[in-house]
Length: 374
Length: 130
Image (cartoon, rainbow over all chains, first blue to last red; front, side, top):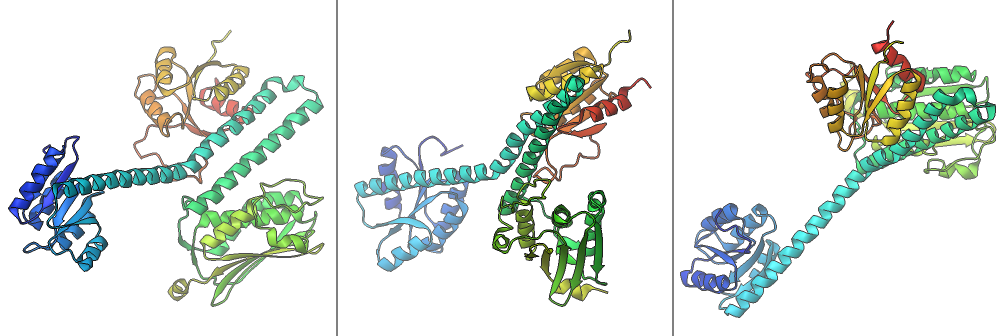
């Protein structure tokens, strides 16, 4: 390919032949590869073909002006450094050239030394620019891969240890006495918690960086809630907890991601079952008005102390409850909050100690969806 | 004494191989192991197992699938039950992965960690004598 050697490639676009030749001689002697063009259109064509490192562009040429040429080159040729050559170096034209993406300008007449110096500076500038770009790309790549990396690297050892416990149970559990079995069971539980924590934490970071998969489509809160209740029913039955629902008719559809909303709902119901005493009830309601769709999940549990309420959605914040049998990941509500935010909604928690807690999800009504309703 | 059925495990995690091997041996199988896709395919050809369990995500994402393809392309691999193993959570960036329609048959997808009794039960379903 002509012009693509290891030598830096310089393009001179100027309508004066003596100037072009002079520049060529000086720059070739300094070890650069030089291409020349006598007008803008030719210069652009050569630049697109040969991708020069630096281009000197005469400001005043017939047909296409140097400004136009520079504008096109700075868009078309990645990392090109543009230097404007001008016969009447006015501050104004220099400023304009810089605005169009020129790195510097060279007033005519100039000496070979000046030309060499500015070329060297332009090439140094280019090297730095490319380096900075590469570093930035690397950093972005690392950030993007970090989550995937963590998800694999952090989960694998946990999974393996759990597999070992599973193996231990399978091959030797008849030799263990009750205490040993209990220790294994407890280790297993804690590991499982840790695994969940990693998972939830990953989810939250994915929402943060936009890699959490959310399909936004028309969804129906009622049917999502029904699915969520169905999923949580076995747990509730085990604890003798009943779920009462009050869902207003003709809920308008809204734009959302069914799966993540499903997780928000099961999360809230799960929390409610954790704190509701046996035989208690969870009240779920969904209402809508012109402005909002509101989902409420209320339990009759022990409630949350007022002073703890403001922090309840913070990651890893836990209210130390005496009757909390199962430890959660500490990230459930933080996840819900993020999901609600991604739906332009809100989560609000009201609570009174010894009376119960109500979680309120508010989704802004989708005006379009309402109009589209039959 | 009946000849033991042979199972090939392909996974780049030594510990996972070891743990799973012990479970399978307890279940009365003869177990072979490979730590990467290439030796996995070679072992497949030399020992002719009755079933293989392949990790989806070895060195690179998708390595397991190329192993699966290679095994299915062998004479003995056409109809042998093959299980894929995954520790990938379905919410992640691979959540949307779906094998293309003409993809070779996977008999089962198992999620790590696997319960010992469940693993033995589904293997028995595939290659049991009953």
